[in-house]
Structure formats: structure tokens, C-alpha cells
Image 1 (cartoon, rainbow, N blue to C red):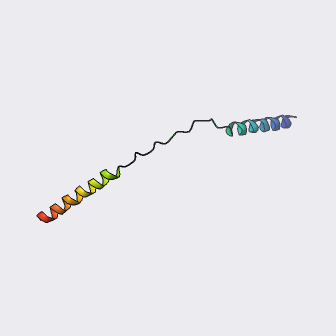
Image 2: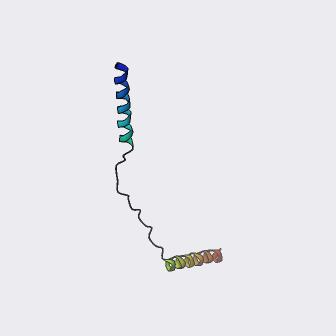
Image 3: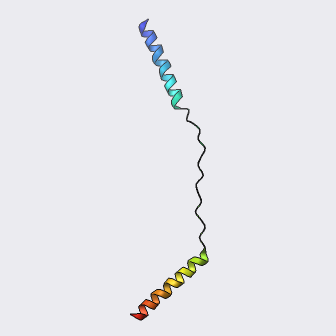
Length: 61
């Protein structure tokens, strides 16, 4: 009789733990922030000024 009660307790306990683990808490998904768009014209201007500065440095030397 004692073994039967222990078996019932083990089965019910295991069932309770398994059901508790499989129910995850629902959380709202976090939106990812989008990267700001790059300004192509500004990039081109920056590259041109860098190229001019490098050319000027090489002419000075």
C-alpha cells in the first residue's frame, strides 16, 4: 500500500513539474531600432575633401 501511494505521489509530482515548465510566460516582443539612413551626398563630399587633403599633403612633401 505504501508503495502504491509513493508511486501516485511521484507520478502526480512529475506531471505537475512538467506542465509548469512547458507554459512559458508570454512577453511582448521588443522592436529593434532601425539604423538611420546614410546620406549619400554627404559621404561623397567627405570622400572628396579627404582626397583633396591627401593630395595637398603629398604635393607639399
